[in-house]
Length: 396
Image (tube, rainbow, N blue to C red; front, top):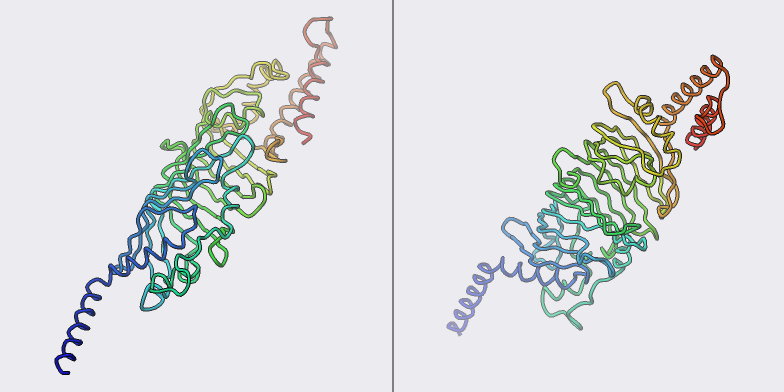
């Protein structure tokens, strides 16, 4: 009996020693199985590494798949997600809480299709209770299976704030474009705030603050504050951009149909606000143009008039430093928005109109009306043309 008792003690000691020696591997195995068993189908992870000694976990090759019909396979790619964690009990199945998560080398692919669909909005339809069923039917048999039988929210608590380092956003626009048009924001550092439902099956809100480089070019800086509601039927988000020294020509597809001018080059800085409420846009913008060269768009209505007034426009819109200050608004449905002048632009045009009309009237009073059929326009005709044009531009 004594020998049997000694043998049992030796076996128990050996088992305890083995468990102690391999306790970190056991945590790694259990945590890996728990997490993978509860991932929704649109989330993929290459490697999960639990460092129990340092209470840290990292996810390598984290990806969120794009909804169907979009060109890129992944909506989101993160080379590494790393964070600290604290266990709620003695083993991993009792749950743990995540702290200070960091997204390193982050890539977000935003796509706008020719039919108007945006993958950020379409993705919300995929975030509806799309979790797999438990891998362990019947009674769970071990720690990992017991945890896997629970919902993600039953054993993990996530923070709302996630840090981003060295991120990228690529925007591919096929809406009203003859070919895909691509813009990028690179070297991004900032924060993302994610608000989930109680079971972590839906994203209810996304906020982001940060800054990066426009098309990856040094000195072309964008700072943003974005709030996005993925639960709305159509695009609903608030966007506030502060920009410095951005080259204007890459944005030509977005301003070309509103502008009588074609810019050969130029940089701009300023504040751009684009708010969307279920597909309706409300936008207020103020830009400062510098180092620009442009010409009047061929065939543009009143092109001859614009040719003669562009130098004056530059004069009336210019600051003492030589920059042109221009503000404007965009309103209406995002598929057919309308362009309006802002108060600064209206004031500049009003000043120009007053001077032009006054000059025409002064010329008329000095020499009297004169015009020949088919000849140069009379001062009366010039004054009326100025009045009609500026009335049309200022009335909105």
